[in-house]
Amino acid sequence: MSSSPGGHAARAGASKRLTKHVIEPLSLVLYREALYLIANSRTYGGIRISFAVDRITRSTWLKGQHFTYPQDYSPAQQLDGAFGLVGGESEKVEIIFDAEQAKYVRERRWHPTQRFVTLPDGRVRMTMTVSGTHDVVLWLLGHTGTFEVVQPPALREQVRQRLKAGASRHGSRRR
Image 1 (tube, rainbow, N blue to C red):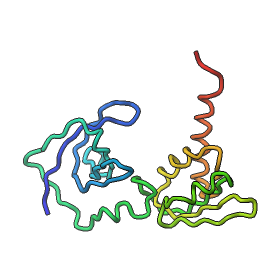
Image 2: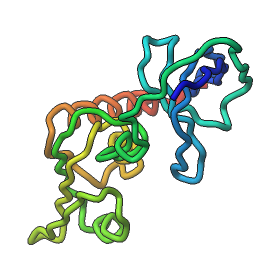
Image 3: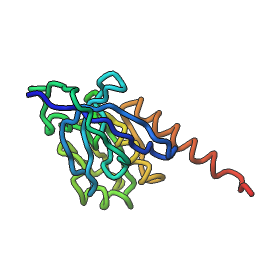
Image 4: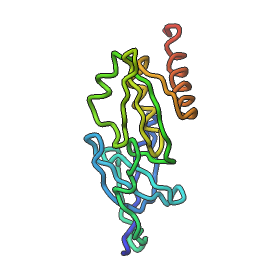
């Protein structure tokens, strides 16, 4: 199946700088009450990127240009195992939540592979196997002060670095 690529400009996260991409659109995904366009970016060597539709500021049809829609592409497979929209290598994650936070964490289905074990002191060990940990880091930061990452070591270090950076911003008051 041959389709036409489209060019678009999307506002980058916090920088508010416009980033232009020539894309090969693949699918639309509803995630956390927002619509995302999954596309291959020709601008970045064909890597697959998720674009928040509400941040797309302009789009243009590139007449006469075509791409072949990947026969093996499946939106479900794209997100299979991912904790959010950003996938990656499959890794086993182990996190221990404080007893006070445990009931809130157990109330929801965060990932299809999640498992919980209540420890003797009331804390809860959560394990899951995720594809990519980027979105796990962001989720954990919302639980700051109530958890410890046990594994993998790289996730533990990413969280430590983000918490350290946040703490350094809250040292002495700036005027």
